[in-house]
Length: 414
Image 1 (cartoon, rainbow, N blue to C red):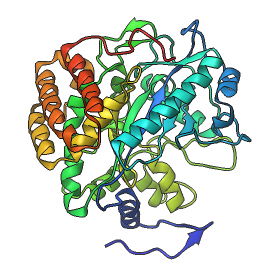
Image 2 (image 1 turned 45 degrees about the vertical axis):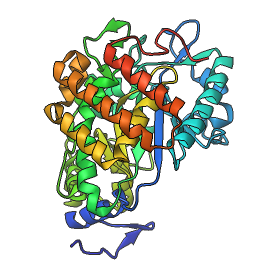
Image 3 (image 1 turned 180 degrees about the vertical axis):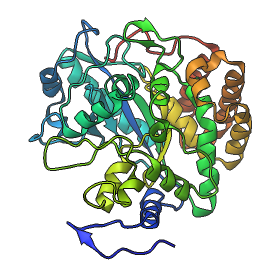
């Protein structure tokens, strides 16, 4: 059992031992209880409507977002939520993101997020901009718009390891599904299940083949980028008998990306892990606030944040964002269906890179995805979605499996 540290600085506990850090991570990253909520985070690249290859102009983006612009773009703005409660943030390359309010049902989530998307898209349209419909920028190479100490330190650290970090920061856009961690007795199984389903869902919902004007040769160039980085930061944690301990050890063994300071330089010596920091590698000892910040610089396919954040999906075109969210929520809400889906995904479990490279062109992924779709068709009947809404989700799945063009792939958002 981790000891309880007593010393504090600026209200944050100083961490002296790795066991203290492990105990702290377990206490904040897995909030267990009856699963009741679902949420989503949606990212898009942003483009000029009449010239999608043109560099994004921060001034146009500020005007378009208006009162919803985040502090990284307008520090003294009002930072208002969207009408449905979603919060707008920006990624370093100007990708815009909506983080939904947690919802108690799929229908509520769909309706509120659709309303927020429509509101955002209309504001962008009025400013001559539009949302992209792929998991990676199809038209432009990476270019950083936001100048903050965090992003400057991140870029320097990533550039030292190759091109993928800058691409991730400035060119990728994902769809994140957020679900409750569930009851303590079922946490390990739920954690293992979302990891097992992940590669097949990556293949099924891959939208990011074309990057910066070229065919990347990958079904998901976005996921290729994440997996091309330091896997101590972006690789999967994987199934574990004790997910909290597994996540804590992953986090403490990951290199620091930056350390906040009073000045503009947040760089940290290369290779120093958080465990090294606890052991005295940096001039001052770390605190729980430092650990909180470090956890936000780790990007595995499944990340615990009190709830489970599934980070492995590409942005979906048009109005199709809801289909993968409904698949995940329906399966996790039906124990029998989840068992069937996990069994179907056994041949593809752990094959994250193959999923990104091959997608449904690989027979094993095609078979697993088809079986998951079949199981989902039954599981959806146990949700609050109307028959019409269920049919819309299944139509998306059918067309993805058939290899047809996804809805919206030939048109912009309104």
